[in-house]
Image: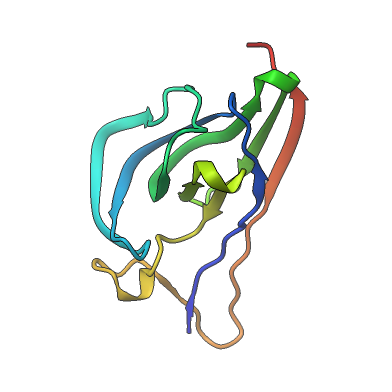
Length: 143
């Protein structure tokens, strides 16, 4: 049986909201949100460079995560850091300015993995399982 897991939390989107997350790749997506083509870099990078994302219009998946993910709300002095287990190598990023929220989604596979090439989707035999956890830590934003 094909198997993938993910966590899809929504967070407030304020004018100063910032996102940090190092990944080696990003998928170009079709208008329906499905992954079309993966662009890989030689090394992980900060795709949003810790700049405000409230005016971005993003619905994509990043690949080959390297380290934690963080969301900061400087105007409130708050930062939240997500520490996903290694199984969550992909991160879905959804931001639409007129929605008032954003989504940062640790995922074990890319969107529509069952139809993508190469096939990386885990296939579970009867009695097998898949698991992962994400730790959340909230603190003061120092920036």
